[in-house]
Image (tube, rainbow, N blue to C red; front, top):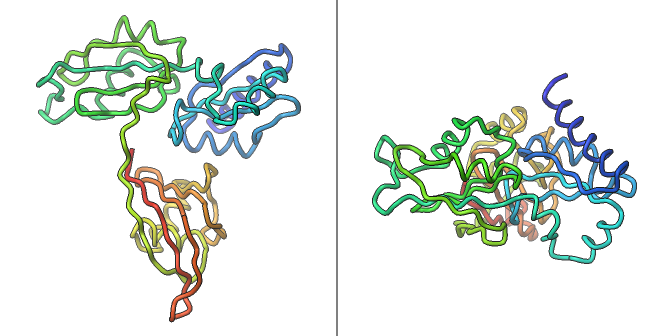
Length: 269
């Protein structure tokens, strides 16, 4: 069984467990490709089971799939905000702080996402147990499944060459860094995906098509397979490792009969 089939089997097992035992169940953290597979296969409902994708904050890269039994589904719909308590309680924040002046890797540079992740993997923790790692100047907020938080608190002592002090916090205390955004205005010949990617990410159209073929492009959380896929206003476009852009406006045609488009481009996380 390949990885894609394992991902779908894992999600289906949690959904069936929820249905059979009327209990909240969840997967481990899913990356962008895994989310796309699961969203295509199951959507947001499976019979009377409500499916929720949550990574602890809006726009999280890595999310869990939570399966809500019928008696929680209505409460979730009524919550409106998407910040549903029982789901958020499945995750917690490990706030790692390096003493002032010591938050550096062995190379002397500031500790990075890779430094924190590598240190956690060195403890034998699976990547699927860890969500987004939000790095700041003096440390990082690390989202993890609540079930492994105690182990991390007991064993996670350092990253790079820096000793860390740790604090376990509820997900509501997560500190999300402000993202850099840039408004991009351009014109395109058509609203097909490769043309819009080229405009939003300032790359040649051929490279945009290559990224699509390599499975690196996602439109509204679903992996895109075709370069000529039509894209509508409001769509979220992601190229893995390059960032995210939202097509905020499609506003008529230019003098050369090209389509005016506006994007809000986000920097890499």
